[in-house]
Image (cartoon, rainbow, N blue to C red; front, side, top):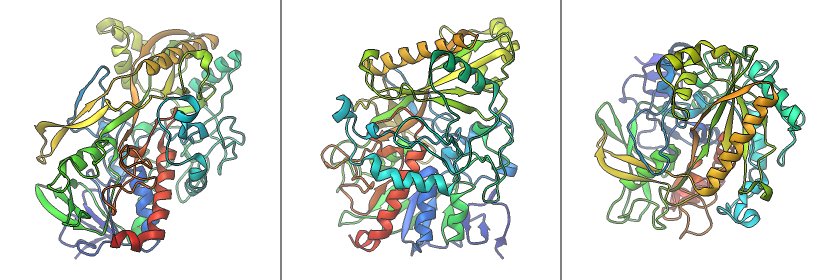
Length: 545
């Protein structure tokens, strides 16, 4: 007999009221309408919207189907597994540290451990080449995503200010801003006010009041390590359960290793591996929502005689122009306690420096956040800062941990085709080539970082602190399968439909043409909702193509 109404922990096949520890009772083994690879921000939205429209949806996720109550813990060390920890090879002038800070593993993907910041991109983000002469223009504009930003924010009850002073949308948000704010955020707002810099509590996917059976936030401060009370939005606790209610099937702990194609050059489904055994999932439409490193790896590894350079890669742009956000931090010491561990990590932000100001000496711009930090995270960061501090010096610094404040950067990085994901000769446990991720900052990127670090120091000083440590880091991953109107210089059209294979879609931050200077999750989800509408409206034509 099937196990009904049990916790999803340790089960791999999830549909209706059933949870199985095996794959013998798959719901849509041979008759799925859509197969989605990846159950993160985009995959969750797609699963929900498509299943709600009546399509038979299968989602295949490499990691577990987390149970927040039993799998999440208020423990920095134990929750590192929420990020993708498998081996990647990194290189370039500024190799990226991959893992918890920029990619997720398991149902919910990165939304299980992101900070909850849900900023919109600006109108100028979609036309940087036209407006600023850098990067490339997207094939869509802000107005194309506006109704989907509205939809997402309403659907998950984003909390935010009544008046948001930057960009095209000025509020109000569905739920009121989070209150009270942390001491670190108060420090940030005091320093900014003295410098004439506007700040707000940012829009957050974190409940400021009860919503949809989930409680308001109690300021535990473990947003980046899994929210046990479920006060923070994730597709794990919001979209995926609703997708299952609408008939979707979720297969977890299963690694997709190949996209299959037929003699007509169309996708027929995927091969996935569970517990050392290979399985096939057929579907007339396949969507890759498995993010920036894994999507190019899967496309390149799926090469065959018809597509010798990898699937959807006639342009040669698969895996190229990956981007991060520069994410340097400045830690400053204060006479009074800040206690960085207290409260939701980000409760104050400014986008005063978001768009190009030629007087600054670089194109585009950045967002600054007051960003909380837990002790282990702080120790790791300052140990690597500058020349690094170790031993007794690190210990003595950490004894004063409660007196440090932190400001973090989300800086735009311009696209460069040499920043890429390729396949190495080494293989992983599935026999897949381990991805080789190459990244270097450009001159403009480094001038932007220099300006931002100087500004963060000014804010800390204006608030009465002394800047002591500057850390170098990156956050978020974007690009690698960019959208565009020209099949010779892009991988997909504006809906994520690949130019080369009419029934193969890509839907994640992989599609980004430029990185913007703010947190990308809201834009990822808006793109996914738009793609879902397109597939629903055109399903028959796409499936028959």
